[in-house]
Figure 1 (cartoon, rainbow, N blue to C red):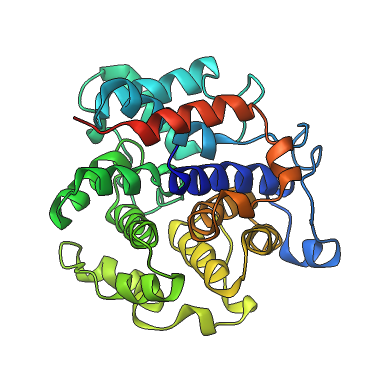
Figure 2 (cartoon, rainbow, N blue to C red):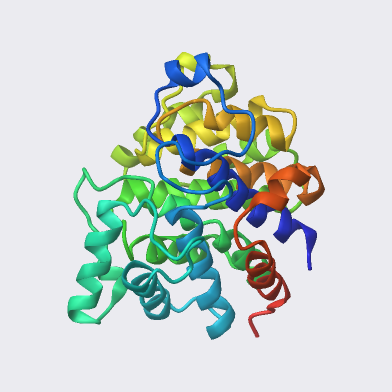
Length: 312
């Protein structure tokens, strides 16, 4: 298996499982009693190592690519439907943490079984992180396929639009994918951050670009913790995961830091873990966390198949 695949993808799943038990807890509460190890039975009645909808939808996307040898939007939507209705791709045989936007979009797809890229919600209030949290596999795919810039934009737009079709969500996904791609090509985290600032975003409206101005026009790493929000809004989640990535020195520190921001802890820790798993590698993940993650062999198998796929 290519280690850059294993580091990022397992880093994502383990971050998800680490943050999930304290999802929705406040930053103030966690700063008083910080989480420093993988636990269970807090917000959800789950054993340690359980991952959420974040990892379920990520591996559903990967399973579709493995099966179809390409990105097939219809098949990805079918996999999401199997997850929602039959608890496929779950850690403990039940769906944990399904977002309302994802649920509504999947319902739309099930009603018409037509173009799934037309099923995503488009209103301004449907800009949660539900597509951002599953978009990482596209960074690997785009690199393997040597896709050009506009091809990456179109790919990200269509995959996000299965559930989240508003331009704010799409641009957030695109920024994350490009940052991950730069990291995967060996750029350090600061160089990669400067590179995403130089990417052409002119295909997005001026209004949408302004949403991401603080991330792309300033140096987010210089902000204090109180300047960083950790909500489920796509902008907040993206800023938080990149801020933690830039401020931390290793994988363990990044996951503990992301989780103890509070709020949408599972998704922000997962997004952070995807990035810092690429940066520091699979070997940097604490063995205790690796040994605790639910269905470890299943995850390793599906990630290995993905890493060996040449998409011919």
